Image (cartoon, rainbow, N blue to C red; front, side, top):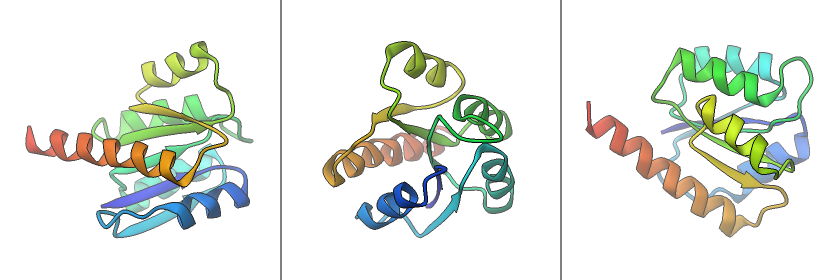
Length: 127
């Protein structure tokens, strides 16, 4: 399973890459903003995406919407410091599967990703 990590912070992208302990992931690609994320998504076709919300060029909720339009089966986990309910609801309405607040622990991240992977496998099984 391929995963795309989208965050404008190199530190956060590296933290996510470092803290993932999941055998299901075979490849991790990254993007630093929404526009780059769309390009990388089209090129690599990841099944799983982590998405920051506050980024230059294209913010996360708009990017979620675009990625969901390209592949409705992509499972998108929003990871953001913006923890208000309205933001989370908007992201989910645009196509995100879940929401994880920053700062997060390695355990929080892996637990959320395990749920995302299980959902992705369920989606594939129903086709």
